[in-house]
Length: 338
Image: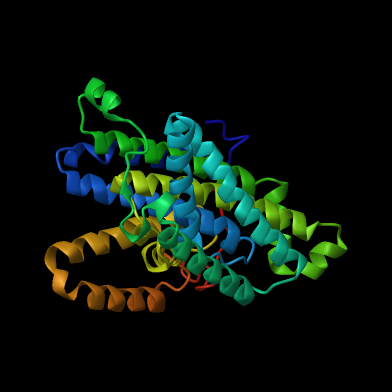
């Protein structure tokens, strides 16, 4: 990767290699491949949230609903038109991007605060869930329907690996593409505009920044990523049902992942997804009956002692060790590509 056009390209390449070799020790275990796939999926959801919330103060709480629209639309378009899901996916992603763009445009034009945006999108989440359940002729109602969105068995047979492994690498490809887009975005004029708007919208407008335009761009990009992530989530589950697109199943996890990893940190979504999914997997294996209680307690500890996110905390500790008195003093640190 060219470090002139994409700052931090070498770091991103290293991350891609690490995730590329991660399935090798556990390739024979469907369970661990599933855990790794969920790490990538929720890193993708949190990446979208980092763009729209971390850099633009638009707290989207309808990521589950948007992800569901992406999955249902991809399946229904593929079946209705008779094309592969690969061709239907861009249609679904653009639809999700259009919905998110509309929400951002209305919110920016009406100068909604972050609280109002969260209330608006949470209500939309409830509406989408009701539609998923109520439109039985299209969605199969609360039971949904089994659907393999992308036929990967041919690739799996050719490569001599299980289909879930192929799906893992497909999800990884989308995550790396999303990271490239994110790093380019925050290091471009869009990133500078996002930062100015987040600091002070009125001051940003006074120097000629079109606040509505930049917020709607952020909403559109996040919506497209969420639509793709939702479709891949349904593919990983091999079943499209409203239960995998609820507020608790998607939005809460994505928000926790982003906060644990570090909001506005380039690799915050990935680090947060690794930490949260590792805790989830360990509790499911060794303390299933106490999973919810222990998971909640661990999250409280993380929020108390890693309030700026794991990345910032670790960086501060390392800075203090190397240079006493260094570090950010627990204050949020702005995004860096490396």
